[in-house]
Image (cartoon, rainbow, N blue to C red; front, top):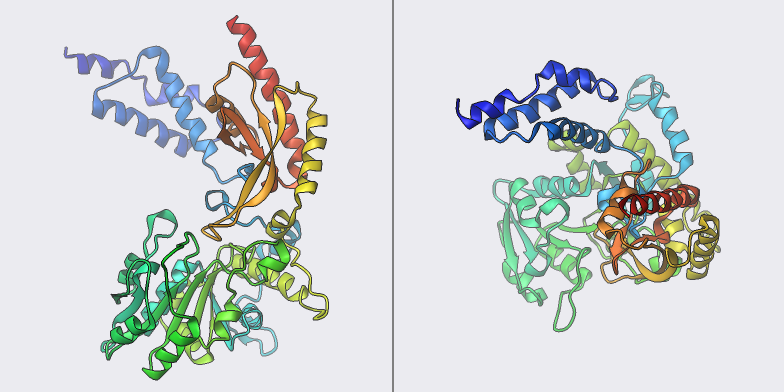
Length: 470
């Protein structure tokens, strides 16, 4: 018998492992598949762990599966629009709004006035057009999809080139790059300028009979400084109109408000400001600075929005009833904030509440939480730090913030962070100076008690661990 055969004989049967893991709240067929996958991995490699470790490995696989279910996570990273944690949090009232749409039938594509089939999203499209100060608008499932739709719609057999500055060939989340998105849309990239400087003459020289679109991409997830140049939007629009070429702007971040006035941070271009300069189409995200659900919004002229919606590709990218309902709520919050022209307010959205917090308010919250935790000063302390907007938005902006620093002696920081991630609900912080930090900028007020309870339990856990080792 070879060593490999001997190893395989040590693998418990699937039935045995199924009986041993019946307590897991995982559907039987999924549990069976996870066990089968692990056993097959052992058989293929011929490397079977010691018998005392077999059950632990199977249980770790099942626990990992449970952890990976979509669930509430407490964001202690200080990144307000955290892409990996779902970007903009949505308000509680929105859950009630969604229930009206989700728990019964709706008039998604039904005209109640005529009793006939209607078109989806008409109200939210009109509202988005008003917010962007555009003639028309439409919605797809994310901003990358919006860009693909714009590119694909502009492309014809005789016009298949898109002009883009080399300084704007950015990589977005998930490793996707603008050149790859252009290729997917069936257009050819025509790069102009250099990494740091692109002039109007560069665009003019590249424009020709095969140009389908002049595209500008907002540098939303990085910034350049020093010897840099890019032509203004209105000049590019004039060039496009002169050559009978559409001009599109991938704005990405979706700021519909004055970020300097509302949050005291650097100004971000708005769709309205780009439309006002004559852009034919502008696309932006719903779940970034707009503060709503994941969606891609395209605003622009009536003729071009109409062409987008006639593209057969549009059906594959359209938003479903829940996204449209959530977006409708978000848009309403923006519109209501503009009701009084003499006294505009900030839309009532969680992301904006988090961005608006003053350092004094955060300090007071931290002090109250420390008092309630009642832990030794050397274990839990308050530190001033910084937070970020996040979501591939405003990379230069740093917001003053306050963090709770948790550092029980003799415990590896990585183990502390893991303990907090294993909490129910998980708490995601970050390591700094060999300690776990929980940034209060991104902790919702109704989550403070959960964080305090976890801090207390973690202290007791690690103190007990140290005593058992002594």
